[in-house]
Length: 83
Image 1 (cartoon, rainbow, N blue to C red):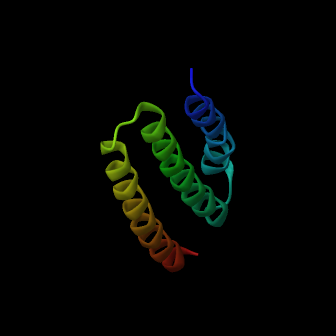
Image 2 (cartoon, rainbow, N blue to C red):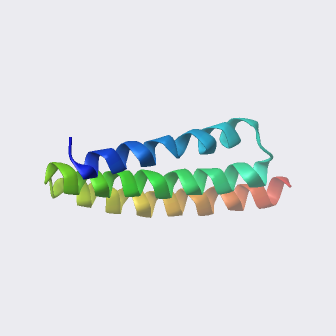
Image 3 (cartoon, helix red, strand yellow):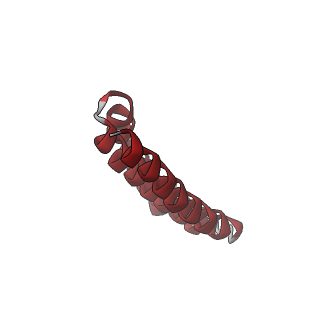
Protein backbone atom coordinates (compact mmCIF):
# COMPACT_ATOMS: atom_id res chain seq x y z
CA UNK A 1 0.00 0.00 0.00
CA UNK A 2 1.51 3.28 -1.08
CA UNK A 3 1.36 6.67 0.56
CA UNK A 4 -1.07 7.80 -2.14
CA UNK A 5 -3.57 5.08 -1.30
CA UNK A 6 -3.33 5.87 2.40
CA UNK A 7 -3.99 9.52 1.59
CA UNK A 8 -7.02 8.52 -0.49
CA UNK A 9 -8.37 6.48 2.42
CA UNK A 10 -7.87 9.41 4.79
CA UNK A 11 -9.68 11.73 2.39
CA UNK A 12 -12.47 9.17 2.11
CA UNK A 13 -13.05 9.50 5.85
CA UNK A 14 -13.67 13.21 5.27
CA UNK A 15 -16.78 12.37 3.29
CA UNK A 16 -18.57 11.01 6.38
CA UNK A 17 -19.26 14.42 7.99
CA UNK A 18 -20.35 15.79 4.62
CA UNK A 19 -22.83 12.94 4.25
CA UNK A 20 -24.24 13.51 7.73
CA UNK A 21 -24.76 17.20 7.07
CA UNK A 22 -26.32 16.48 3.67
CA UNK A 23 -28.94 14.28 5.31
CA UNK A 24 -29.60 16.23 8.52
CA UNK A 25 -28.66 19.88 7.99
CA UNK A 26 -30.52 22.96 6.92
CA UNK A 27 -30.79 23.60 3.16
CA UNK A 28 -27.92 26.11 3.11
CA UNK A 29 -25.71 23.78 5.15
CA UNK A 30 -26.59 20.95 2.77
CA UNK A 31 -25.39 22.99 -0.17
CA UNK A 32 -22.07 23.71 1.50
CA UNK A 33 -21.64 20.04 2.46
CA UNK A 34 -22.46 18.97 -1.10
CA UNK A 35 -19.84 21.33 -2.53
CA UNK A 36 -17.29 20.15 0.03
CA UNK A 37 -18.04 16.52 -0.86
CA UNK A 38 -17.45 17.36 -4.52
CA UNK A 39 -14.08 18.88 -3.69
CA UNK A 40 -13.09 15.88 -1.58
CA UNK A 41 -14.20 13.49 -4.34
CA UNK A 42 -12.07 15.36 -6.84
CA UNK A 43 -9.06 15.20 -4.52
CA UNK A 44 -9.60 11.47 -3.98
CA UNK A 45 -9.60 10.86 -7.72
CA UNK A 46 -6.43 12.91 -8.16
CA UNK A 47 -4.65 11.03 -5.38
CA UNK A 48 -5.81 7.68 -6.78
CA UNK A 49 -4.61 8.70 -10.24
CA UNK A 50 -1.18 9.33 -8.81
CA UNK A 51 -1.24 6.16 -6.71
CA UNK A 52 -2.32 3.84 -9.52
CA UNK A 53 -0.46 5.79 -12.23
CA UNK A 54 -3.62 6.01 -14.33
CA UNK A 55 -3.79 9.29 -16.30
CA UNK A 56 -7.45 8.66 -17.15
CA UNK A 57 -8.37 9.42 -13.54
CA UNK A 58 -7.09 12.97 -14.03
CA UNK A 59 -9.65 13.52 -16.76
CA UNK A 60 -12.36 12.02 -14.60
CA UNK A 61 -11.42 14.33 -11.72
CA UNK A 62 -11.58 17.36 -14.03
CA UNK A 63 -15.03 16.38 -15.29
CA UNK A 64 -16.23 15.74 -11.73
CA UNK A 65 -14.98 19.15 -10.59
CA UNK A 66 -16.74 20.95 -13.44
CA UNK A 67 -20.02 19.07 -13.01
CA UNK A 68 -19.94 19.49 -9.24
CA UNK A 69 -19.50 23.22 -9.61
CA UNK A 70 -22.30 23.46 -12.17
CA UNK A 71 -24.60 21.30 -10.04
CA UNK A 72 -23.93 23.47 -7.01
CA UNK A 73 -24.87 26.58 -8.97
CA UNK A 74 -28.12 24.99 -10.14
CA UNK A 75 -28.93 23.83 -6.61
CA UNK A 76 -28.20 27.31 -5.24
CA UNK A 77 -30.48 28.84 -7.87
CA UNK A 78 -33.39 26.59 -6.88
CA UNK A 79 -32.62 27.14 -3.21
CA UNK A 80 -32.80 30.90 -3.77
CA UNK A 81 -36.35 30.56 -5.07
CA UNK A 82 -37.58 28.32 -2.25
CA UNK A 83 -35.99 30.00 0.77
